[in-house]
Image 1: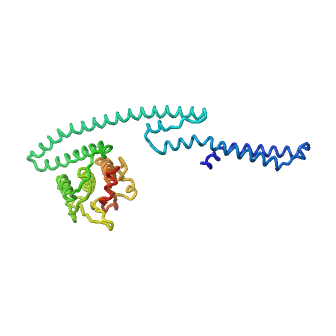
Image 2 (image 1 turned 90 degrees about the vertical axis):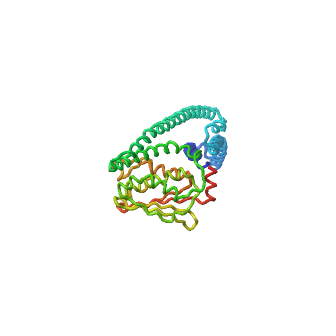
Image 3 (image 1 turned 45 degrees about the vertical axis):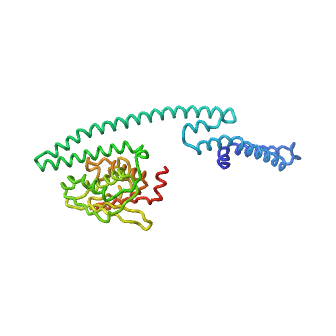
Length: 341
């Protein structure tokens, strides 16, 4: 703080130095002051200036320190208003009153935005549930078709619509995920079988198979949100896999005891330039720009949900050779930190 104050008051220091040089020049050139000791005058002036500088430092930084302290302790606007210092000088008091008014305006605008956001989320959720009704009817109509070829094609398109709605639903709920998850022991194999079955029509169309290995493990997580993460990764694997290929899924443990679930494909892969950005919102990458099927939301949502559940997501990929996504689940003692957030 003292170094910062010196930089802020460098104009004072420069003014004092120039004044001293001017005073010394006058006392040296004017014969009337020949008997006056320059060293004594300089010492007195320097001492007076240093004492004045130190006194002003403590006086002027008192308000700044109180201001910084009030902001460091809590980020809540109500607390900031209560703990905001009143100021010691008339200038500081004016500044405090102005800032307090600005905070009140910001708080009102923030509350309005929160209300608008909640209303928008409610409208979106209502719309999604409304769309699900005709979507369910469409599924029943597709299942009743006699033309098996047309039925399989329509099932794939229906699945894509269902996945897009599912993404939007979870995107809307993401901001309140901490109120919607329940940590329990989850059977990975059971979740994978359910999710793979959902992609049956799409996999049959592309003749894609699944190679499952060492999935007899259980982890501590939320079943619904974990299923969503797996769904997004499998969706990408099926979408970008070549025809007549396999998706490999296996589970193992690292040296510490973390369960690691790996989902890998031998598809088109991800370029090294796109790899650092694949979890960014709405990022579609080089491959995504070549097709309108990519929204850039699936991996973004999966990554954000995984972070809320304490799951670390890693990816390794080579363009033209495929991609492997790894989910590292937290240990049981690490779950306490998640529940305490």
